[in-house]
Amino acid sequence: MTTTEDVYADLLGHPETVAFEPTRQAGLARLDDFASRTSAHYTASRNYDLGPTERSTVSALSPWIRHRLITEEEVLAHTLARHSPNAAMKFIQEVFWRGYFKGWMQQHPSVWTGYQSGLRTAQNGLERNVHHNTDYQSAIGGRTGITCFDHWCHELKETGYLHNHARMWFASIWIFTLRLPWELGAHFFLTHLIDGDPASNTLSWRWVGGLHTKGKTYLARPSNIAKYTRGTFEPIGQLAQTAEPLIENDIHPFVPFVPSQSPIQKDLLLLITEEDCQPETFISGTPKDVVGLVSPREADQSAKSATFKKGAVADAVLRLGGQENATVTNDWTSTVITAAEQAGTSQVLTAFAPVGPSATKLANLQNVLAQEGITLHQQQRPYDTITWPHATKGFFKLKKMIPSILSDLGVSDAQTF
Image (cartoon, rainbow, N blue to C red; front, top):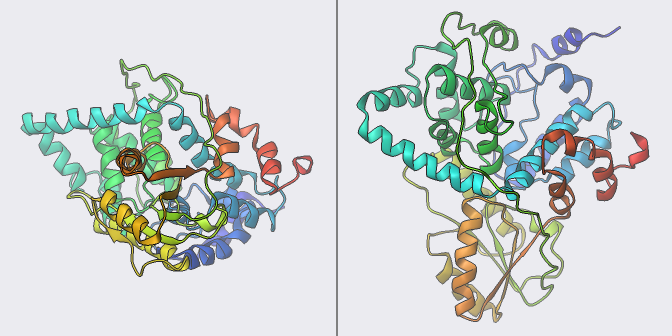
């Protein structure tokens, strides 16, 4: 009988690095390459972090999914074309975690504003306390003396990516061993991750600290790190042995999710942002023109993250026959007004942006455009409108609905489970 160790061992000796090229073609190639491993191989190996030169244990699809160069629905369809739902269920569940986090934060938007407020407070605290600032600079510089943590810090900055298990270990060490504010750690991740997603990142850090699932924390243990790095790291005596849950005074009210209405179908200007770089798969009609907008790289945003975002938007614009490059500007309003005038339309359509920086920019843009007689419409993907309403409590509630959701999407028959 084949054991978990047999399946895992079969993956060893086959070095596999992943080139994160911000194009749909590259995302599809990675998906096709990984799809055959989404059953027993993935189940047995997914927790092993063997470093950036050996990514065969995970899909490494998140940068493309984050910007929807490829979509969750495509990933699920490719997977179920090769494996039964039961065989691939562990991978399918991991795909749905992203939808769960997005849906949950969309229905608890004050979590995002609370994070931003907490980040400002933590940053101000660094200016007032030289000792805390020294600890923080050591952490983001990879100079803590905790070999595994320092390694992951440098790997993140050099590659723009970390294995999910390493992200959990890193966050736990940051919060419980280094005793640094979780908001600073979450910001550090968003600064460098090319797959940085406001919802997944914020809620994952909150989950590690005991804020998302109240009282439940994640403690990084030397034995666990040693096992799942195959002995590369074993920080005995260096890590916190307990993880007291963080507490907050804020109450984050539930805001029911209401799908947007069906927007215009013709005579429109199509606006592409980093939130969805494949609008042609769910938006009907032919746009009169296409424009892609990217905010300039912020002072603390990594070059890798900024380059991937710009490349993803540019790839979408070029596929749809729009301008030669994505426009990089903070002045989205003037760019859109000019493009709408040139296209001879007062109707602008873009993919719905979940709670986060893009949603804030689009809300501001919508208000200003309205004063110019231009209407900005946001259209939501069926995947989101079907999945998000189930993200009201813990993941288990959504998990039970996966067969039904897949059936509603036409990806799988619920009776096959």
